Structure formats: C-alpha cells, structure tokens
Image 1 (cartoon, rainbow, N blue to C red):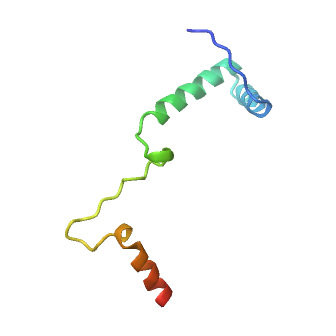
Image 2: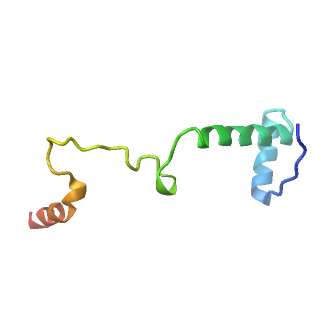
Image 3: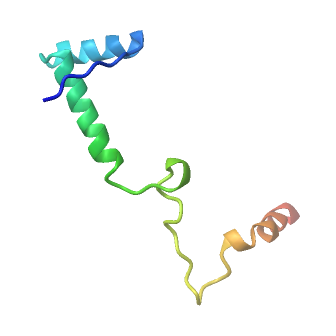
Length: 82
C-alpha cells in the first residue's frame, strides 16, 4: 500500500467518520473503499458530453418517421396550433 494525504472539508470528514463508526471500520478503510468504488464504477461505462451517459443512446430507423430531433420546430408549431 501507498501512504497518501488528503484534505477534506468539515462536512465530508464528519460524514466519513460517521460511516466508519457505524461500520466499525477505520476512516482510512472507508476512504479506500469509497475511492475504489468511485474509480471502478465511473470509468467502467462510457459517458457522453458532460457526463450524460444517455446522449447518443437512441437511434432512428431509416424507414421510420422523420426524427423529432430533425423537425423540432415543426413539432413545436403543431403543439401551439392546437
């Protein structure tokens, strides 16, 4: 293991200490587990711009209707006409 030093704001420190006490663990163990979880779940799935993983997830069918993303102005005008 490597030894490192971090600085935490008061609220984060208090919450981490509470978690450590509740789980009968050391503060260092809680921080290691939290960091390991963050690093394995964050980098495990690709994300779009700004961290929005759903961007680019949908696909239009070539034989289907014109996607709303391409005719949003028309659709908005239709809603206002009603």
